[in-house]
Image (cartoon, rainbow, N blue to C red):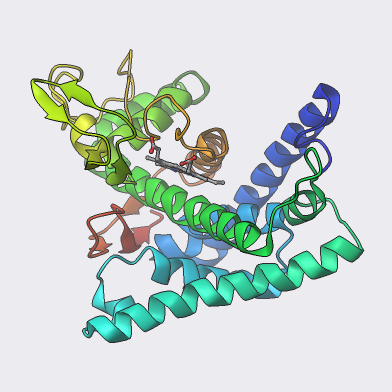
Length: 310
Ligand code: HEM
């Protein structure tokens, strides 16, 4: 992907192309939704946009999209028996198999792109050479898996919650429809706060630290509960209320500022905003039925969500 690490004009061109790709994909998804009618919103809408965008960016061929989705589903399925079965050994085998399948996909793509680079992220990664250093095959595979998993499941979860929230809070939908362009960015932030698609992350302390009177030592393992931070009454008045006009909205849905802040936050925001704009312009009265939730403490996932177009 020339432009990714290149000069500013090249980077701007790449950002503009991504925006166009997201818009085109969102328009196609809504065309298909209107042709299909009432359906499972997760499969038909929420899963499709991030899957198409991240696979396209990576250079994954279209006939592999379903395989990528099936394997990222397994990797982030928590302990949901629908994906993992009831048996722990069986679950471990499934998890390893999903990682292996994605690693094989990137190994094949990397071999092809190192011979004939294309305009995609895998080409950029295999040809990158910084002070004589290149990514090893294992590093490439783990970064690829991180990106496709993180790029897929989280934005799908945010989009599914978006429809649930707009259904549960009709006055907020009316407010948004009354000034779509003026309020859509605030709505996207509030959706990420309220949904907290990633519920927590586990980190290891690199140094001693004292917080709220509690001493932590180097090497301690800690969990950062974003869902809880996003409902902090000291920061968010009536935190359970979905309020697209909340300002400021210092949520931690993408993590805290620092080296681990979500790498895909800008892309996720674009995807959310473009999809919501497309949906609410063309199917403004779409509503959600009862969600079928993922059994996971890590991702606030929705497996299926019936929708009515009205
Ligand atoms: C609504 C959608 C998304 C949400 C809610 C979300 C949330 C998060 C959170 C909470 C973290 C951990 C931050 C921390 O530890 O402080 C994270 C990290 C990350 N996210 Fe996202 N994410 C989203 C979309 C994406 C997308 C679309 C991509 C890729 C294209 C992506 C790639 C990553 C990566 C690579 C990391 C690891 C960063 C690191 O540790 O250096 N995310 N995300």
